[in-house]
Every structure is written in C-alpha cells, then in structure tokens.
Amino acid sequence: MSENDPQKAIENGKTVLGIEFGSTRIKAVLIGEDHTPLASGSHEWENRYENGIWTYHLEDIWAGLQASYRALSDEVFEKYHVQLQTVGAIGFSGMMHGYLPFDKDGNLLAPFRTWRNTITGEAAEKLTGLFRFNIPQRWSIAHLYQAILNQEAHVPQIHHLTTLAGYVHWKLTGQKVLGIGEASGMFPIDSQSGNYDERMLELFNGCREVQGFPWKLQDILPKVLNAGEPAGVLTEEGARLLDPTGQLRAGIPLCPPEGDAGTGMVATNCVAERTCNVSAGTSVFAMIVLEKALSQVYPEVDIVTTPAGKPVAMVHSNNCTSDLNAWVELFGEFAAALGITVESSRLYETLYRKALSGDADGGGLLAYNYVSGEHITHLEEGRPLFVRTSESRFNLANFMRTHLFASLGALKIGLDILFEQEKVKVDRVLGHGGFFKTPEVGQRIMAAAMNSPVSVMETAGEGGAWGIALLAAYMRHKAAGESLEAYLADRVFAGAGGLTIIPDPLDVNGFAAFMETYKKGLVIERTAVEVLK
Image 1 (cartoon, rainbow, N blue to C red):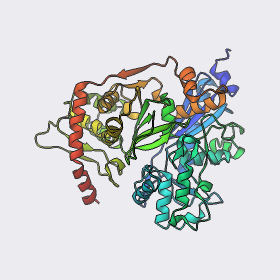
Image 2 (image 1 turned 90 degrees about the horizontal axis):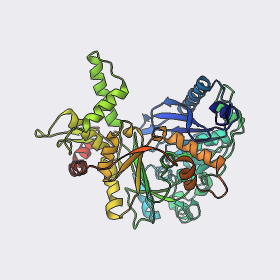
Image 3 (image 1 turned 180 degrees about the horizontal axis):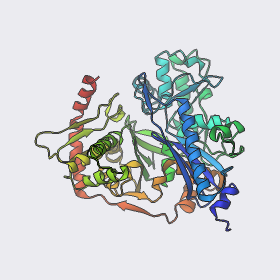
Image 4 (image 1 turned 135 degrees about the horizontal axis):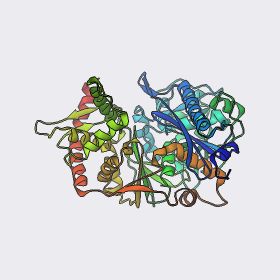
C-alpha cells in the first residue's frame, strides 16, 4: 500500500476535516495530504423567520452538524472500509456576522440574529459616523449597539459575544477565538496590529449609552487569531458533540474558525492583492483584496480582511438566488402537474441555458429578487417582484435572463463604486457558489455585470468547506515563514484547471441597459414594501 493511499491516510490521521455552515446547507469535506477531497457529507437546513427575526435554533446547529459529519463518516466507511476515528486537523466556518450573546454560564441571552436581518439601521448609521468607518447592519457590533439603543434587558448580562463559527468552535474546544477574517465582520480590524481597532474600541466604550455596563467591549469579543495559528484542540465533550457514536477521538488540533467570506477567498486562491472572488448563492458577495485604502467611507462597501489579515473591499447583497430558485421550483411543479418527472439538475440547466438565447437586455422585463431587505438599495424589507410593460418581449428566455440579471442587480450598484469612483483594479475574478453550477451561464452573466473575465475553477464546487479544510491544512503543514498566499499558490493550486469566460460586448451593454431600468424602478419595490404588509 503506497503512502498516498487514502485508506492509509485515514487510518493514520493524515487527513484534514473542514465543515462549513452555509445558509441552506451544512457541508463537511475530508481532504488528503494532496489537498484533494476524499469524502464529503451534507445536511440541508433553513433559517426561520420568528417574531420579526431571521434565526436558527441552537438545536438546529447541533443536529445539522452531527448529520453532516455522520454522512461524511458513512461515506468514508463505504469508500475506504475504515472507521473515521481521527484526523490531522479540523476547521469550522460559518455565515459571517450576526449576534450570539451568552451569559457567564454559557446560556444564550437572545435568539441568534443572523446576517440576513436588517433591523439595526439606527445603530449602523450612528456607529459609521462615530468610527468614520462603514458599519453594515449585519455586523455583530451593529446588532449589539442596536440592542443597547433598544434597552434590551439582556445586554448587561453579556459575558461573551460571538458568531456561528465562533460558537461551534467554542463548544468543541472551550476556546473563545476567531480567525481574523471572521473577526473583521464583528468589529473593525487594524491590519497593522492584527487585532481589533483600538481607537474604535475606545470610542465605543465611551458612548453614553454604554456607560454603566459591567463589561468593556474588548472583554466580550473573541480573541483574534491569524491564519496558521493554533486555536485549541477537540475536547472529549466536543468529540461527542460532533460524533455522538463515540468513534471520533479527542485531542485533534483546530485552526481558527473563519467566516464564509474568508473560506471563499481561500477556496478560489484569492488572498493576494488585486484578486477578486465572487460567492453567489442565497446571498452574493464580491471580495477584492486591496492595494491601498479607499479614499472615503461608502455605506455600500464593507472593509474586512483575508484570513491572513490583508484589507479587503467587500460588496455584499443579501439576496441572490432565493427568488430565482422559487421560479425554477414553480416550473418544476408545472412539469409534475403534467405528469413529467424532471430531475432538479436538469430543470436548472435547461432554464439557465434558455437565458442565453434571450435579448441582450432581457427584453425590457424587470425583476427584483428581494426576499429579505437589501442594504445596498436602502430597503429594510423585501418584496420579490416581476414587472413588464405591454411592449416588453415576454418569453421564457427573456424571463430567465431577467431573473439572472436581477440576482446581481444590487451587487452591481456596489461594485460600480469601486470600479468607477475608486478605480480599483483586479487581475482575476474567480466565481463559486450555486449561481455558477450550470457551466458557463452564471459566468457569462457575471462577466457582463463586471465587464471582466470570470473564471470558475474545477475545485469551485467544493466551496467553503474545502476552504476551511485548506486553512486547517495550512496550520498543520506550513513551513516556517511560509505565507498563506505562498502555500495556496505553490502547494494547492499549482496547475489547477478551470474555465474562463470573456465578457461579450453585447452582454455588457445589455446588462447596463437592464441596470438603468433597475435603478429607476426601485421606487416600485419601495412602494411594494410599504403597501404589501
């Protein structure tokens, strides 16, 4: 049996495990010493809208984690005839931002408020003015300050504030830590010090509304760790939380927990300056690693960091494929009503490809995909809409093309700030996520939106779970002084294949025409929010 034999690697604990909590799926990936996936497992889940809050219950988190790990370990046994009992390292990732406050006894003080909520407008605006730094509504500090402004009774009891990934990591290791990229979505980071910005911490602690609390902000935030630093080991209790069967052994080292933005950058090898990755699924965000600071504060642009601490301009839209998925499912229902069974993958591919034969501008149709609020266009709630005039060219191709365009509408508004006002340059754009699953279609639409070549790598389908596994592998295998950028370029992505789509001028002009109507028609969306309660 060779040293590269997967069975031997699994038996000897030379594999690495990555698990990511996405919006609709929890995915686990086991990789070998060459960083390629050996097995995977997943569990579908969905957020709940309860009492005006987008949330997940804590029991959903643990049930989903255990189900995804069980599916992975079952696949390991089926493929390699080995019980998964240990691995070389583990990493956890999750949806960034949000609000998970705990008291000194580890009790959750308020329902988990996810990134999807747009209920912190007052706090975000005040903090942006105070810090002279953009604080989006979904950031943890905005949620905390809004709870303070609302005089919520639980706030004085907060002993620890964290994110979804931070929560899971804490329960499995006992360590209250975050990777720097994830931490940069809680509170602004100083890339020079690699820690929370001291000036802004002092400004927050000095706020009149914060006076009298028994805590300082720095005392309740997780400790910040850089990529490659050790972040604790799996405890006996943690091992049973992850694998209730008792097979998995304790003592496995964990890398710092990271957010889905950071793992997306890693999974697409976009951690160097002038690289951009676009993650498009339930939400969509573009991450551009900056050469220099932006000239001013823009509410549409977040400044976060790579897992190695480099500053990144992030344009994030709450809404991407949810409304589009609903339309595809409707067509599936219609097919079923006719007695025709169509596999989901074929349904998506057929409808997506139909969009490529539509008019360049979508035939004068208009859609808004706002299932939830959208901060880029200043809407606290969303109402999915489809609009046309009597002169619009209404056919299936234009209908699908318009909804693909609409999935990127808000993102385009934010990106134009970077490209047109700040003259930000990118050398390459890498796409990943469900929007790109049908070959070429999502890339062609994204290339039209960005007027830039867009690549999808052969590994893009592995997503953030693979990205956090790579970060765990980096912690385990990096050489002294070896940067994350060098590790990925030389050890992981050297010779990696993929497909690049060059923007078609007709598509670019068509998308621009659609966007003119999109921006003018936002008044329709605002009216729908006001009227349709």
